[in-house]
Amino acid sequence: MPLSPRSPYPVVSSSRLAANIARMQTLANHAGVRLRPHAKTHKSPVIARMQIEAGAVGICCAKLSEAAVFADAGITDIRIPYPVNPSNADRLLVLMERVRLSIIVDDADVAVDWSGAMVRARKVLDILVKVDVGTHRCGVNPDSPDVVNTITRIARLPGLSFRGILSHAGHTYNAESPYALAAIVARETEIMIGLAKRLREAGVPVEEISVGSTPAASLAPTQHGITEMRPGNYVFLDRTQVGLGSATYENCALFVVATVVSRPAPDRAILDCGSKTLTSDGARGFTDLPGYGAIFLSSNENQPDASIVIERVSEEHAVCRVPESSPLRPGDRVRVLPNHACTVTNLTDRLWLASDQGALAPLTVAARGRNW
Image (cartoon, rainbow, N blue to C red):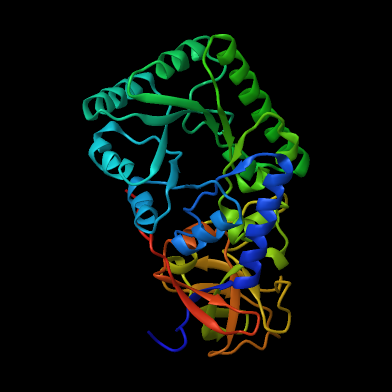
């Protein structure tokens, strides 16, 4: 282990990380909902334990392999809000021996297959039905005339314990204004509460109504009747969250430290953090956020230098447009606020936790690459 990291490397402010965890837990408590953070953002059992110690009821994981890492670390309540195929029943049954596990379904035939697998194993699996509230990715159509019958059929299958309904308003990330974002959240609430009411009237108990996204989290107190929220990105935050009003630059905890490796032209500088570090994700928000990250210089720790734009990335290079007057020279270091923190985490073996005094400590990204 080197005494100091070689660039490029991701650094996380310990104090900002702790403040972000505390802030979201306070928000959930104020809204009267359970907080179940999505761990795919940090992929770290250490950070998951920080969230649970602050009051979270458990975590979400993206895939079974990711969940296994957290189970190995002693996390005991894991939800996978992803449509796990029943061909993975053997893997899921192993996990069920160690943790309280729940998954989602959005297809009655798939639910039947899960029922069969659980009956054969003499187990009972907690499930929630995913509802499409406008993202149009996964989920049952809440406007379908058969939706109540479909969920009723799923809820009554042997070997399955129907816990409730779950949504992800991922289209909040495409909102063009705070008003549009609020409208999306209001519509999500209307759909979920309305569907729960119809199910209860049909004799189907609905214990949980789970929603989740960091952009929508601040509106949780307006979502009356919701029981659980599942934001993930909030632990680190990133340039997109700033663009969507979910954070300020002063809240953002994860940055990439990069080195200027070339100044081949007066208006161009090259950093050593290409797409293998920053990814090629663009930023989203209420205003245009050009480039592949925001550059912070040591002269201003809390505001990016808007005159420097990462115009393109190749695998190892970040090509920046800079003013001719920029003093950047090869060997200089900058901090880059990534457009999307979650993907950056999955590209590195370790994060470096920074104290307010500047001391660095390595933190292994234990679930890195666990994408199956």
